Each structure stands twice: as structure tokens, then as C-alpha cells.
Image 1 (spheres, each protein chain N blue to C red):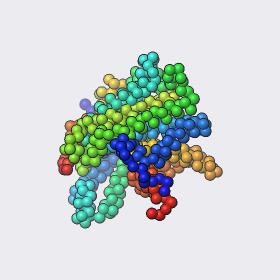
Image 2 (image 1 turned 30 degrees about the horizontal axis):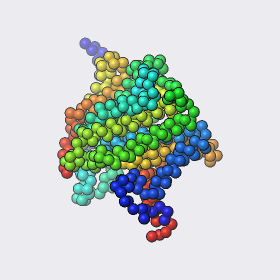
Image 3 (image 1 turned 90 degrees about the vertical axis):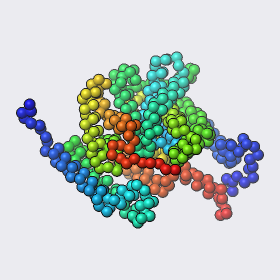
Image 4 (image 1 turned 180 degrees about the horizontal axis):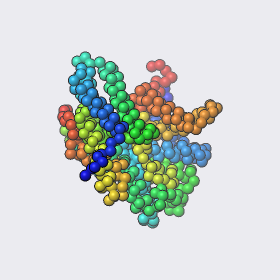
Length: 354
Length: 165
């Protein structure tokens, strides 16, 4: 009753092509933006920003990036941790070697460096696909791990191999407090989400989806696989690279090569799969789920008043986490985004039966 | 030249014998038995296999059981030689380049792929490693598989797939 498009007529081409054609959806998004930009900064405390909001937002950006590649173009990649590492280390090197450069530009340059690496390691996708491609991207993951820990130039010859950075400063404005970091990340996420949403609605997104559904057929109707696949790799690794630069500079502050290991790649892939392949909102839901569930499981024994050793808690956390992932995928193979879609379908009739 | 001969640990010999026996058994199982043929049929085309009366659920149970058993044997051998720890799960990732180098659908491919990857990464570490700072066995296996796939996407002994629209 409340969520119904009856009576909303599209009278212009512009209205027909709107991202949110339904009025209630526009209100809903506006409420979320208001909550994100105004209400949360007023209510949340430092710990909540640091432990929950900032990681979730940056991971959502990475998951949206990987979703463009895996969900829209159908190229399975296990190299997202590597792309994040390339973004982070490239941003670091641009920043220390050209100090007068604006840090935001450095983040974008970090993303562009990840794009270059992504296109190079996307070339195998022209020959191989599916599981073979996933293993090929594993090569990138292990190679970057090794590169950033063995070649000292990238870490500016720091003796320990780990990097510590100053808070980001843009035109004299320092992003040092959690609330400022949060707003920076949220702004980046909103901008990139708009870009991603419009990319997948347009010509290039349709080319990706056609390639995903059947690459031979797509080739026959005139989509050049080399452009479709490599552009998906390029855009996706740009997103993930920017997310990596933010992760390093805004969330971690100081890090070592192991911060971007294979586990990070796996968890971003899990976010995309659990959130829902081929859905922008799915990337956000998946990132929230995968980031918050371990925190929640970790705190649960304390809330319930059960006395357990920390080792026991962390092992139980692994087991329950894995079990829940399997449970979710068995119940809803299409991910959280699908659950959200079903909810919206039900809402159209609620509270009436017909 | 080698007066004392070559030293071979007893565990290595036992491991080799077990692995050899397992390979032969698996090869016979996949190629000759009724169930093995059914497994390969399902791998080739689910629907076609089901339509000629192969029970899919039953096949899934067998596939996972066999996979688990083989991995169990590999894990026990590896664990008894190099110790059991959680990072064993990352070692198992090295099975993937072996698999794609040798090609799917081939037991012989897995053996030869394993030999190439295993020998390749140790030899590269000794002969190329010193020039680039060492530790290259960490990624060499994956890069080898990646380079190989560029020229032969189906692996050494895999079947060539032809796409039809």
C-alpha cells in the first residue's frame, strides 16, 4: 500500500531512464543519505566509527568493484587483495615521491596503477575462463605479496618493511578524527556508487552482461570480447585500487604486506557472493554482513554472560562464520540482494493480501 | 662419484609408494569401473547424464567422498613429514596450479603437473632466486601455470572444449 508505483506515470524519456523510477525509492535513498551524512556523525562514537563504519564503507567500495568484474562480466578473480595492495603502495609512493601532490589525486593515481596491473593480468581472461581464470589471478595475488615484501623500493627502504603514514591532508584540512575520515570514505563511496550504477546501465555494462551470459554469443552479436573483458578488469581494479589506498591510509594508518594477503581476496569475493552477484546494493550488503558478523560473534559470549577463553571464542567464531555462509547460500543462492528484492515485492501488497 | 649413494628417508619411500598406489587405483576407478564412467559423464554434461539414468545425488556423494579421501591421504602424509598446522590449508592452494597445468579430467596430468610444479619451484628458487632476492617459490608455481595457460588453455592432458551457441 505504501510502496506502490500505481499512478506514477513516466511522461518523458528522462523519467523513463531514471535510476530510481519509483518515488518511494527516491525517498528511501534520500533517507539513507541523510542518515549517513547527518545523523550518524551526530550519534556515533569514536569506536563505532573506527571498528564498524569506516571498514564497512571501504570494503563496500571494494566489493562493488569486484562485483563489476565477477557479477557483471562473469570473470572470477581471486586477486582483489593484490589490487588493493597495488592501490595502497602506489598511493604511498606517489605521496612520498611527489610531496606537493594532493592526496586525493594520489588515491586516484593509486587506483590508476591498479588499473594498469588489472589490465595486464586481465589478458589471460581472453584465453581462459571460469575456474582456470581464478587460478591465474591467484598468481597475481602471490606475486604482489612477494613484490611488496621483497623489493624495498616500494616500501621506501623502511627496515621493518611495514609502512606508517600521516593522516591525509587536503588543502590544509586534516582528516585526523574518525568523524572526518568517515565522511571522506562515505563521500568517495557515494560518488563511486553513482559511477558504477550508471556504468552498468549503459552500453558498457550491457556488453559486460552479454559477455557474462555467453561470451561466444556476445561476440557474434558484435561485442568485442577484448574490450568488454579488459574494460571490466580496468574499471574493477580501479575501484578496488582506490579502496585499497583508502584502506591503507584511512583505516589502517600503518601496515605491512601481509595486510593485503590472500585472505583479503577471499573475504571480498565472499562479500560479492553473499551480497549477490550482479547487484550494486549487494556489494554493500555483503560487505556489511562479512565485516560485522565476526565482530558480532566475537561479542556474543560477553553479552550472553558465557565465560570462555579467547582462543575458544575465536575458533568458534571461525566455525559459526563458515557455517552461516553455507547456510545463507543454501537458503538463498542469489544472495542478500535477492532477499532485499523479495522484501520489496512483498511490500507492494502489504498489509493487504491482494 | 657417489660413493655413499643417495640418502632416502623411509617416510619418503612410503609416501611415494602410497601416492603411486593411489594414482593407479584412481586411474582404474575413473577409466574402467561403471561408477567412474558415470562420474565422467556427469562432469561432461549434467543434464545429458541425468537423462540416461545416472542418479545425480548419488554421484555427488561419491565425488565428495573420493575427493575427501584423497585429500585426507595427502594431508596425513604431508602432516607426518612437515608437521600439522593451520597453514596447511594454504598449501592446498598449490594443488590448483598443478591441476590446471596437467589439465582437468586426467589423473596422469595431475601426476605430471605435480612433478613439473614441484621440481620447477625448487629449481627456480635455487637457480633464479638469488638474482631477484629469493623467496620466488612463493609465487613461481602460479606464474608457471599462468604462462602455460596462455599457450595451452586446456592444460597438458585436458580435453579441448568447443563452444557452441
